[in-house]
Amino acid sequence: MKRQLVAVMALIGTLASLPAAAQFAKPEDAVKYRKGAYQVMGAHFGRIGAMANGKVPFDAAAAAANAEIVAYMSKLPFAGFVEGTSGTEKGTPKATVWTEKAKFDEGAKKMQDAVAKLATVSKGGTLETVKAAFGAAAETCKGCHDNYRNQ
Image 1: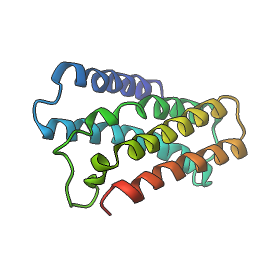
Image 2: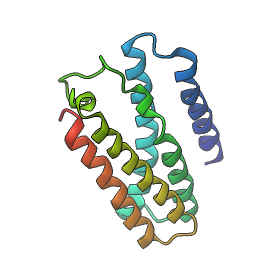
Image 3: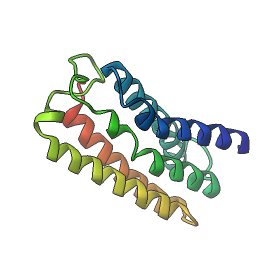
């Protein structure tokens, strides 16, 4: 577990430094950055979800560690939402990300707040409190996907 955490933190550091270093010379760079951040975030969110859904035994320490990573990662992908990176393929952002930027940013903030609460609740929380916070966070993700991601 410690080895995985070290590897994840190294990846987080790398991802966090990308916007400053590259400033997305090409739209593809922004897409890769955004997808990488979401991939790490999703992997750790999924681990909490497996506990919340009873697929794996609840481990408070693991839930807290994963929630902390999700909360940190939730701040990163939005730097990769630059004009010219929408599309019509499944999983790509709709053009409404830019035409409804204030609403999109509001949704991002709601998600960040919800995963921050999940991280807080996970520290010493019970399965039931983690489950509730996980469900609330998942709803914010779904709301954004429903409105701003091509299905």
